[in-house]
Amino acid sequence: MMRKNIVWILIFFTNFTFGQNKKFNNHIETSDIKNFWNAYDDIKKLNDSTEKINHFQNVYINKGTVGLWDFIKAKDFTAESWIQSF
Image (cartoon, rainbow, N blue to C red; front, side):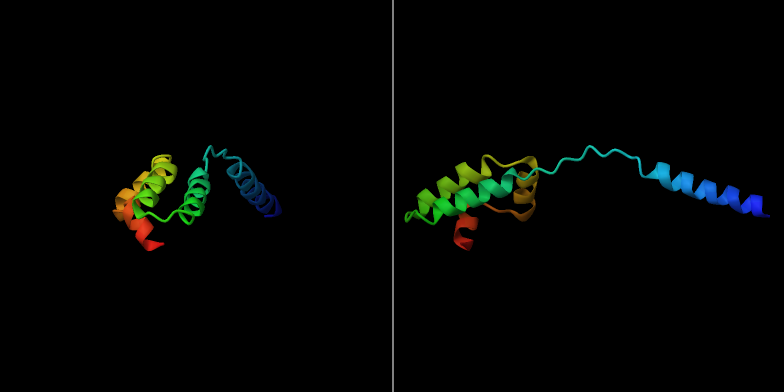
């Protein structure tokens, strides 16, 4: 009986230990955050709405990651709609 319990304990800890050795190659891209705040700060200094839209498009959206573009597509955002929300 004691031997059986020890075997089960060893199986449990072996499974637990080897289950934690997965190596993940995920990468979190954060450049969109930096680009957004750069564009936002620049836009606050501009007065012309067309300039704001063009600047936001060039500094943030055009330099965006695939994830940002998917988000924009899913939410149907445009540079103009973003500028209007500020």
